[in-house]
Length: 80
Image (tube, rainbow, N blue to C red; front, side, top):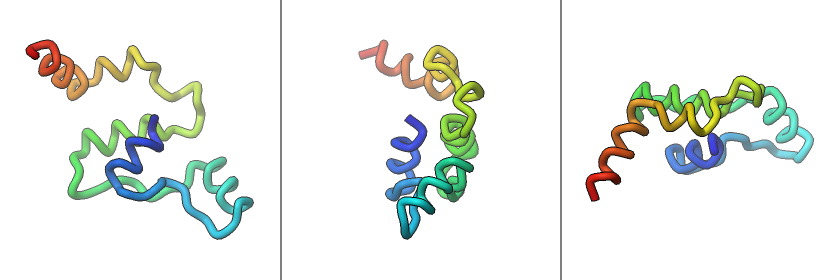
């Protein structure tokens, strides 16, 4: 999910390289350009959390749904 949100925000994939071997290495170490302006610190932190290399440290869906912005979105959908 992190890669998809990253690409939606940045309009490019988080990992790019000249060769498949270099791409693999970048993915394995989690080397990507961090998201900055014009995006909020909340969005940057949210995506960074999703892009955490160690899958055990990545949030589960129930944790993601508890993020304040996600709660706001849920409230908006519930109104409709």
